[in-house]
Length: 149
Image 1 (tube, helix red, strand yellow):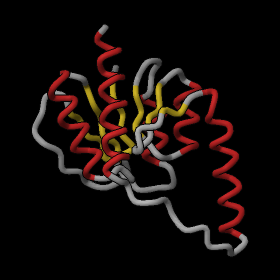
Image 2 (cartoon, one colour):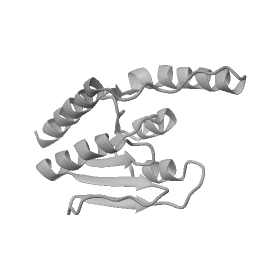
Image 3 (tube, one colour):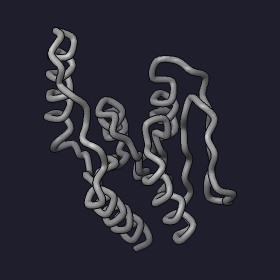
Image 4 (cartoon, one colour):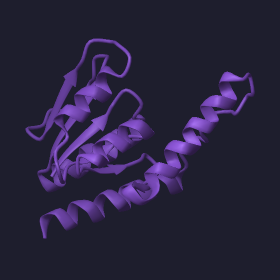
């Protein structure tokens, strides 16, 4: 398993959980962003900076993703694309996005986009809670243990 991180939108607290997990398990991880990234020194962590542009990091992640890889993202279209390639997608709140739920998520995302474009304030996502962080860490651990079996 190779972990690919949509690092442009990934909060530092989630990255820290990932850094610890990949060091503990020896799992390869690549962070992709369109801005410079600072990561701890590690043989397991790679970073890729793409040129700024619409969905440039997403496109690189889709290109890199292979069957069985794990993509960390809250970007629903990106999750959909990597799921179609046979990768796993985990959001920052610890929820697995799967073939069974991604179409519903895309539909809800499109609906919210339409509301925003029509001038309705839909607010943003709620801040990550301690429970969200714990859920993410637990789901990540489960996936990494399964990968080792």
